[in-house]
Every structure is written in structure tokens, then in C-alpha cells.
Length: 232
Image (cartoon, rainbow, N blue to C red; front, side, top):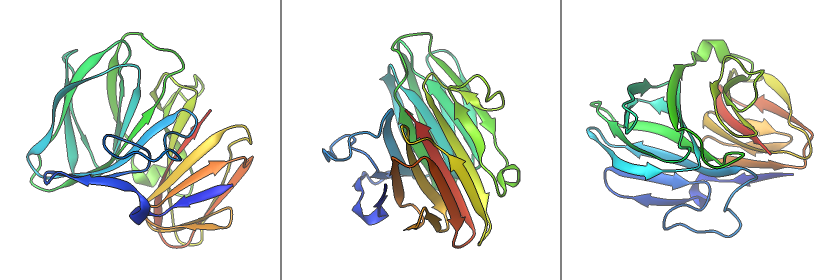
């Protein structure tokens, strides 16, 4: 089953400095049919104005993955970590038993990003943060695992969940197959372009909730950049 969630159907908020769309219930947006998909709890599409951002605030017991699409985001946390993650790169914060962090757009242009929250397999643990570049050319025509809770994904950023975050870039007409398994769940969003997912068209920034599909075939209807979560 593929459920298309058109971009204009998503919840959202406009705070001036932040324009956000919520694929799942978040903050003041609540839809009982869109609370989570397996361990996937949040997928926010954020646009952050220049020289603004999120001041220091706490998190616990959540794996938070940030996929930067345009611009850059600067992270600072209570562990002393500080780093700038730019377009094409990914950062992961394992909140563990508790951490405070801030996220600011210190650039002279808006920053757009996906922020993805995945529930951990167990609560607690030492919090951590990390970031890594994932060149789009390396993802051409294939999925690359960006973040993973599986030991075999040695090139991915680690998360503490039975899940993977994957990215790919496809030229129009290219197809990739992914064996997700009928017992697992997937969520796919084209950051750009449009794709066909098992016969359902998914346009740029739409969401595709994938359930009870052992295999997923994704065909690019135009040049596309896609992000997908595979979760229990």
C-alpha cells in the first residue's frame, strides 16, 4: 500500500523566520491518522531565514537526522560539539538520556532541510552528535545509506534504532529497486523532481507512506533527488 501525502495537505506553521511543513503530527498540528509510521515519528520540511534559528532547547530519547537541501545549518550542543552542515550533508544527534542544542542558519540565504525523528530501540544512553558529507554524485542511480542502526552499514552515520535513512539521485527514466520487507514500513519524499513508487506518482516534497510492500520500485519521471526511511 502506497499512501500519497500531497505537500499541500501537510500540516504546517509560518513563524516568519521559520516556514515548516509537517508530514506527521507535530507541535500544534495534530492528525490522528498521521502520528507516526512505525518508529518514524517526525518528518519536517523546514525553511529557516538567514541569521535565525532554534535557540538552545532540550531533547531526550530520540534519533534526530537533519538532511540539508540548500544552505547550511550550524549546530552547537551541551556536550561541546559544534559544526556546520551544508547542502548535501547529513547530521545525526542521538539525544539519549538528554541533551541541549541549538540550530542556526548563519548564512546569507535561506536554509531548507528535512528534519527526521526516529524513535530509538531503547531509552537512555550517552547522547552524541555527528555529521558527514554525502556527495550527490556518489548516490547517482542508487541508494546510499545515510544513517543506520545496523552494524553492516559502516559508511553511514550511526543511529540507535532499527531503521535506515537512505538517499539517491535519479535521472529521468532511471529505476531502482529496494527490498523493504512486508513487515517493515517506509516513508519516501522527493527533495526534487517526481517519481513513480509502485505505480503511484509522488511529486516533489510530497510524502509516500509505504506499508505491506515487500519490494519497492522507484522510477524517476524527471531528474529527482529522493530521501527514504526504512523502519520497523
